[in-house]
Amino acid sequence: MALSMPKKIIYASFAACGLVGLAAILDLIIGMPFGGSVVFDVLFLLSAAVIVYLGYDSLSEMA
Image (spheres, rainbow, N blue to C red):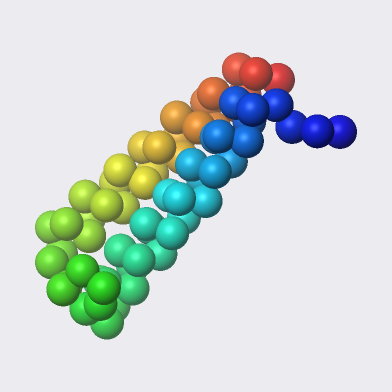
């Protein structure tokens, strides 16, 4: 069964949030790729978590 376009966009945003979250965690641990700024890393992680929550909420409303 093919996915609808809104679901594809939400899943793509999940993937993008995963990459941003992974990059922020790596930056907290090894100081790369963002230069080790803890404030930005925490903000990146919070924004990724908010977008995942909003995507999950949107998917649950579509079902």
